[in-house]
Structure formats: structure tokens, C-alpha cells
Length: 193
Length: 193
Image (cartoon, rainbow over all chains, first blue to last red; front, side):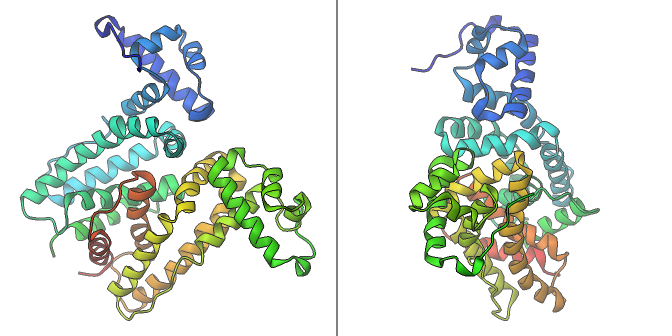
């Protein structure tokens, strides 16, 4: 049985915020594998019990911290055009992936998740799925207007993937005009001709 | 100074092949961080000197082994149509990413490369760049025929990224017809309307 947080009503938000900051700093320095609850507690200046009151374990603590930097970063634009909406999503994806902490933490945590099913599940539940759900709402409006040439799930794969591949996998900086040209290509890819 | 292989003319290809197999098995089991030259030599039934005669160190040995599974896996189709050529590239990318060893090793080694500049450079030189060069030849023919609406580098990002994102990052299996529909979307994305 996992321990579940209790007494949520009395948790202090400022303490949660400083623990989150400590988790992200430890992740960036040590990586997921070497991160310990002790080191996070020490860096945040709290006892380990303050961590276990909030999260049942390391995977949930780490993905909750990543979620703070990741889920609010997805906008749900409604500019009136698919080109406008996709442009906003592309810019936001770029800003997220080039955030110094995300750029350092995400590949490491994603790789760890390959060998750690609990972490993979927590990452999917608290970061991947909520981000995708928010972007999905944009594509679903386009689908409802009859503008999509493919299903929404494939459209989401196409929108998220190229910047991740280039920035987080290949580590190649963008050339000038890249985001605009990518947005144009995505509009062609997902739209009915 | 790095040690460089000497006496390449007398290296036995069968021994190289069994070392490569041992490297890939160790990578899949232990991951890059815990892989040791000793363990590879033991598994291959050779002395450590047999490794150092072939590669200056761990990064070069690992990326050479990965290269064997990765570079010949990229076809250079010339079917006469962009749709045909992209379809072949997409099928080959799918086969590569779902290869049991690649699926296990690639995210781990890629993540390690974030913290290890020598490994990142070796991975780029022996796996990433040669694979991309081969795919580039296909896109350059389309560009020469005046068919591309965007530059070849962005076209390469678009072709490689969605399957990597879905299979190696999100770990979501493909739905039926996915590869065909993706190929259609890529044709729209890269082609002049």
C-alpha cells in the first residue's frame, strides 16, 4: 500500500512551493536516479515528513514538480483561425522546451521512465496527458469546423513532435523563421486541402 | 590524448561482431551509465585489449555498436514519387524505433548524452548524422524537382519526429493505418500546394 497524503487542508502553499523549487534544482543537478528525498528535504529546509505529507513517493513528488512548470505552459488559444491557434501552440512548445530546467530535466526523467513503470505512469498522468488534453481542445475546435484532414490524435503528434525532436533529442538550435515556417507546414499537414 | 585504433588490417570481423553484440546486450541490461568495458569483454569472451584496439573508449564503442543497428536501417528509396519515397522512410523509421534493442537503448543513451558531451558528439557523428544524411538524399531529390514548400532540414525534422515522439517518448502503440495516414500528412506538409 502506498502512503497517501493526509491533512491536505493544513499544508502550507509557500512550503510546497519551496519544496517544488528544491526538487527541480536537485533533478537538474543530480538527475532522477541519484535524487534522494533526504537531499530535497535538506535543500528545502524541511523535514522528510513534509514531503511524505504531500506525495506518496519520489515519482509522484518529481512529476508534481515538473507539472508545475509544464501544464500551465500550454495555452488554449482561440484566435479564430487554425493558423493562429497552431502558431500559439508552437510558440508555447518552444518556450517550454527551451526553459533551462525543462531542457535539463525532461530527457533524463523521460529516459528513467523507460525502466521505471511507476514513474512513467506518474509522468503520463501529471505532465503528458494534461498538456495533451489542453492542446487537444484547440484541435477539436478545428475538427468541429470540419477543417482537419486527419484524426485529432495524429494532429497532436505532428504539432508536438518536431520541436521536441530538434531541441530535446538533436539539440540543434532553431534557424531564423523556423517557428513560422513550421506553423505553415503544420497547417498544411493537418488541414483538408 | 585519446588512444586511436592501430593495426586495423588485422582485426577479426567475427570478433568485432561478437563484441558489438555484447555491447548491445550490456546496454539493454545495464544502461550506458553502468556499462563497463570489463563486462563487455567478459560477455564477448575477449580481453579488454580487443576493445581498445577497436575503439578509443566507451562512448565510441557504444555508438559504433548502435550505428550497426541504425545506419543500414535507413533506406534511400527512389520510387519516382515523393509519396512513395516518404512512405518507405516512414516504414523504416517505424521498424528501427520498434526494434527491441533500439527501443530499450536509444532513450537511455540519448539521455546520458545530455550530461556527456563526448557521447553526444559520438552519437551525432556515428548515428544521427549518417541517418539524416541518407534521408536527406531523398528530400534533396524532391527539392531538385521543385516539389518542396520548405527547406530540406525542416522537412527532415518533420519526417523523423512524429514516430520518435509517439513510440520513444510517449510509448503509445500505433493505431491501424497510422503509418499511411502519417505519410499522407507529411506529403501535404512538405509539398508545395
